[in-house]
Image 1: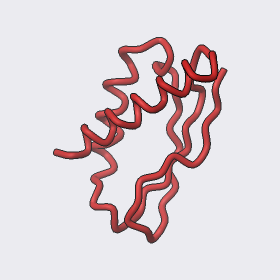
Image 2: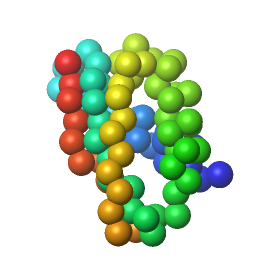
Image 3: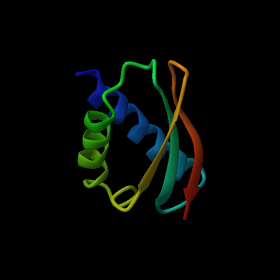
Length: 81
């Protein structure tokens, strides 16, 4: 199940960005998930939510998923507080 590893990578990236910009929380993260990326979206979101719930910086993070025709998973936009 590589979705959990991908979710873990995203979560780590978000925590790094919070610290880098000296903020407190991730309010929103917008992702694009390509239809050819081979990602089971429900598994990815479940994994992310499990991780996010364990950290003050991400426990209230809203993930917005956009679908496109690529084979990529990309962080498109971020709102920090």
